[in-house]
Amino acid sequence: MSPSPTLATAARVLMQLRHDPRSVMLLLIAPSMLVGLFAWLFSDQEGVFDRVGGAILALFPFIVMFLITSITTLRERRSGTLERLMTTPLGKWQFILGYALAFGLLALVQAVVTVGFAVLVCGLEVTGPVWQLALVAIVDALLGTALGLLTSAFAQTEFQAVQWMPVLVFPQIILGGVFMPRDQMPDVLTAVSDWLPLSHAIDAMEAVTGGGEAWDVAGPLLVVGVFAAAALLLASGTLRRRTA
Image 1 (cartoon, rainbow, N blue to C red):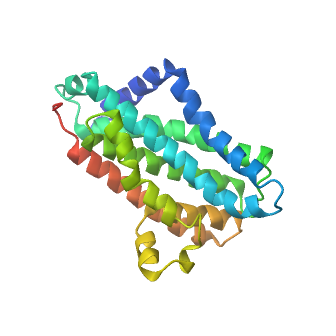
Image 2 (image 1 turned 30 degrees about the vertical axis):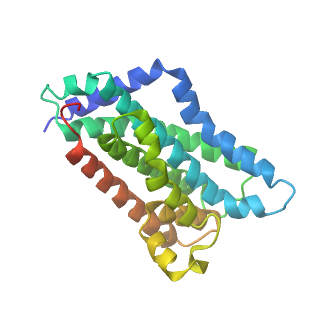
């Protein structure tokens, strides 16, 4: 199997984004701005940002990548580009993989910018290696990318993609442990939280900032990676060749 169609798809997406500087700026800067807003909010309360900063770092890259990926892919469908591409030998999984590769590269840059801003500008205390924090941020952003691609397979319009947020995104934020430690939730909600990938991304972030053991980071990170891979497989299996 030649990787050329996948690489060509990724290159085309990156070329299109180059002509859309507002989306690129939103993708790269918005998470840092929101992290900075939280740091400012707790600036008079010593140690609070250090406690919640890891969880906050897991939220915004995930949300931004979900929105950008789902809306950009739907724009392809509504413009007819996707339908034309599907008449070529390009396979559905190659299309999804090309998009994942392009947005994965952007996620890498976004993670480095956001983590660097949180540590160097906002003063987030990180007991573990900072590179691990960046690695978790990248995998977390890839999860948002994968779920965005999956959502685009079901939604017909950008508005419908946004409507998926209360189903796919908001429960993960509420039950992820940002507002209450997961072990203090009612048993049923703790069990539900264990099945949500963002919960494990937040666990990994907090393990790095708190100086946890290697497996405290690697275990949750592996779970997030499996969820992201499963979402990409499901997205390639449900992608329609024809626009309804």
